[in-house]
Image (tube, rainbow, N blue to C red; front, side, top):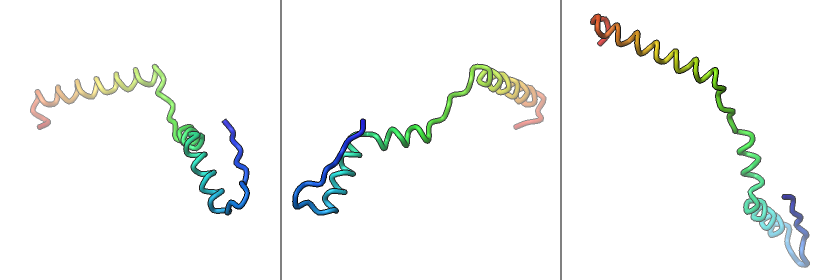
Amino acid sequence: MAFEIIKQERETNQSLIRRFTKRLRESGILMGAKRAVFHRRGKSKKVQRKATLRRLEKRKEYERLLKLGLKQ
């Protein structure tokens, strides 16, 4: 998705830069690059399973302590 901007006759440098940045924004190249930089990988099935089991164990322990009157 590369594009080329050629300076037109009697065009100032500022208008050329403005036209370039507008074209860059419309193309979505910059947004795609930012999305790639900040993308986080999803957790693997094994890690998700371990986290879920740990959470369930903690909940079970908390409920046990509640029944014993040690937590409020």
